[in-house]
Length: 93
Image (cartoon, rainbow, N blue to C red; front, side, top):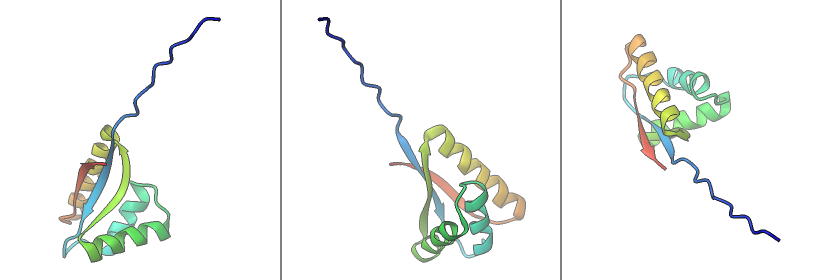
């Protein structure tokens, strides 16, 4: 009977996309971003928005690095287009 060696595939590192609270970006805009960019439902988007509002920071989602960075870019582009100073960042999980 032959023995097989199985190589273990390492999962790619995961990164949190963080949204930062500010005094100018409307709550409705943040909820809309969470629904469109991050695919959250209305209830989940509202919960995350409230966490950002109350705690100053919230996790919009967790992704592999390339996707996380793409989502941060999308957030910044939409916010800038609307004239809001909303900031987002990436942090290793």
